Image (cartoon, rainbow over all chains, first blue to last red; front, top):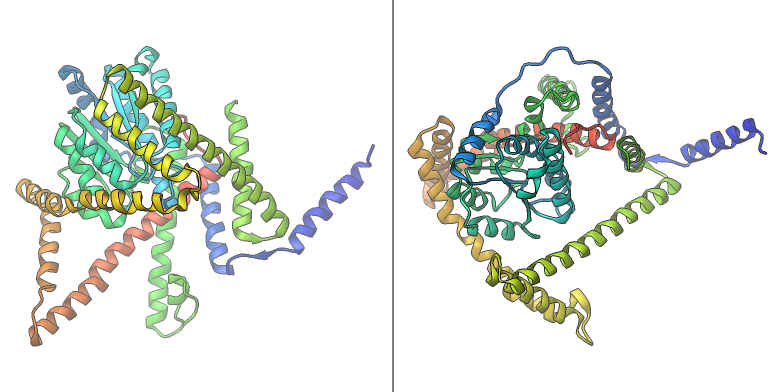
Length: 284
Length: 205
């Protein structure tokens, strides 16, 4: 039987050994920024949120009406989770947008479950398909309509943005409403054109900055651009985690604006040029 | 597996990967590598299972003559062609010249053809948007028209002025708008990623 004090001492020595043989991977500045994001987020998680002003971003609050029309016309609704998926060989920001789209899928799925409208979910890989199926089941469970879950379908469009756009463009079904949220890049115009062509209403959202004009010109009835796809879930349901994300993001945005303004003033005054630190290239 | 157990696994793995991202340490790096290798193996298994499920599903569609038999036949033909090219005796797998030919001679031209439609679809989208006259679409159309004028291939002093104006437009207003969007997206993505790392989520999925 080992002595507890000795075991504790071994653990402390082990941790101390790891710390003493470690170095920072980044410079001090980027490391502090990264830890600052986590600190702000955790501070907000620990603090109860008392005030929140809801907004109807992209008209998603009116999804029930679209489902009523779909039920009346006997058609389905489509949710596209973009072309990035969760495990495809693309960058993390694109795949993170697929995760950010899941609360919107849940919102639409709950409305479709209540209205008895079949939902068609387009995903880019098997992982996002599995997560989408889980979200659909949760929506039917929360609306006490588990018998309707079998009418909805998860479609894996296949690997590649071209394939995804091609499948959407050649679909013969005409849904009452279509929702495209997730990473859309060079294929965005084709993807949205294919969805808009058949659907009665289209809501489109992506955090890809280069695709903002494409979304605006897509003819969508509701558009989410920039950081909005990450924030929209907070307005759809009173979920404390979603609202904390938005509040933490807003706090960090104000901090970034303050750093840019103060840094610009200091640079203009000739005190110190923090341009290198701000753009991540080091001191110039 | 219960939800607290899943959240616990996500929290431990998330903290481990975060620590490995920030700190250079051999022991930490080895443990993080084992975790990442495990995730890659699971992903590879899931991808294989998904491909097999796709083949079975399309084969059943073809056999029972339901859905889209032509599409099912094409999917099976494509899968078969790549498998034969990569796995035939003497082949070198994904790097085999026959696989390379299938990609270069079939997949890439097909993709380029689809993207060739962008010219028509972008013009049509802009025309539709201007027809409906929402303010943001009008502003986008005007900005696009201005940029097209600035990029006109004109020589001499007017051409030089247009070129410098185009450079200024790209560096100042367009650059500012894009950087503003990027900063906002980066911050919200960082916060969403932090939430994922700590396993803090809603009850939707």
